[in-house]
Image (cartoon, rainbow, N blue to C red; front, top):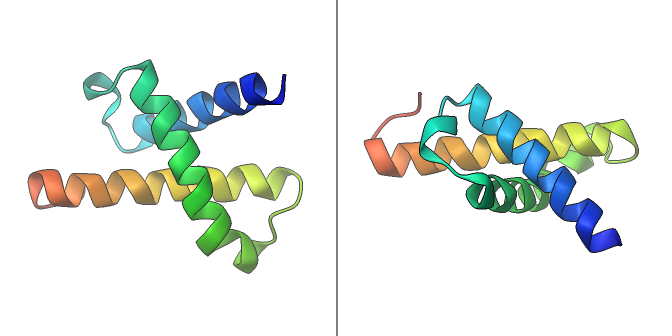
Length: 82
């Protein structure tokens, strides 16, 4: 059951990050889940120690990590961050 919740939350976070970074039209649901999960890992590793990773702030750090991941991908894909 935890895996299903983890995938759903990862998909929502990845989708929201792709809306912010304007890459939603290029991504499908699978890539949104991957971006959300990898972004959560990045956010938990880099951002959570700075802002506190408990409760709601854990979701904020996961979202910021997903945005950072999409910015890095856009930088390598297009040579600039949108």
